[in-house]
Amino acid sequence: MKLIAKSLAALAVLGMTSAAIADPVKVGMITTLSGGGASLGIDARDGFMLAIKNSGNNDVDVVIEDDQQKPDVAVQIADKMIQSDKVDVLTGIIWSNLAMAVVPSATAQGKFYLSVNAAPSQLAGPGCNPNYFSISYQNDNLHEAAGAYANDAGYKNMFILAPNYPAGKDSLSGFKRFYEGELAGEVYTQLGQTDYAAEIAQIRASGADSVFFFLPGGMGIAFMKQYAQSGVDIPLIGPAFSFDQNILQAVGDAALGVKNTANWSKDIDNAANKAFVESYQAEYGRLPSVYASYGYDTANLLLSAMDKASVGDADAFRAALEAADFDSVRGKFSFASNHHPIQDIYVREVVKEGDILTNKIVATAMTDRDNAYIGDCKM
Image (cartoon, rainbow, N blue to C red):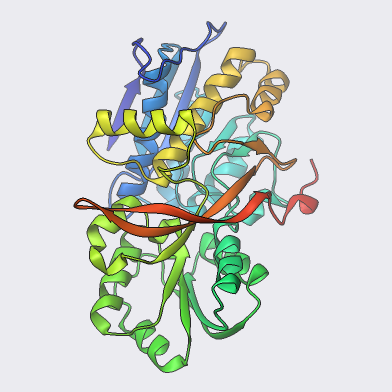
């Protein structure tokens, strides 16, 4: 599947216009548009393209392709985009195993990579690169906040589980970095798994007082439905990825009241976020997700750099990206020295607004959190 999207000059819905720039920028977006993880990539794509449209900037050319959630496909697309399409910037990858397959080669060839989601620890630490920026988070962050929240909630004996791939390993490492209690069990599931009967049986028998799980996309939907049907009455917490806007509609009322950690929520009170939520609903007829917010911020970071420097001047363009001179939907936003965000992370609760399940912020879990790998990044 291949979509080629070019932004058209238009009135900025949010009242924002980009200054004239000297050179156009060609962006290659590799993201997941089919299969069980499609909703994540679709939202990231839609958020990114909405920001481009709203900017009124017709000097951004975006080539979009479906990675099918397969590392070999992602590598083939990246090679084509770099060698044939001659892109200046790459973005879009959702899954950390795909990022590990694509990003090191892309940055080694002098391309900029702006991550809308995946941010594995390897790319924050020893594998960091001056041309790699994560706009979303560092993989551990939301899970670190869940560990901190678990302490505040008084949980002492948690069962934790995540998929066996780089982001899953980062998630449990991040959780354990801040969680102070005991572990009733620690399980890695298969990536893409949809039957969790065995894991739920383990939870039931473990003596746990609570469960932390990271299962994004279709994995989270399957787990939540099966967990609700099992009758196991042990409280759940997780990162936003397990309770995101699209997942909630598929899971239904079983998610009500569950706490989850996020660096974005539709009720963050700033002008940029309010305009984003309104514009996204008007454009697509649905509420945005965290993935949409990351895509939107990534595009606006790119546009802010284009206002200051030509992508052909790598040092100047990199400095413009590092400045992060844009209005983030998260409010305050800056980069740590390893090009990962410094940001607040919140605790949200799943609620119902009319017929729509969504999240609202109930607490702040971490303030100005950077990441654990800054000292390992030598650039």
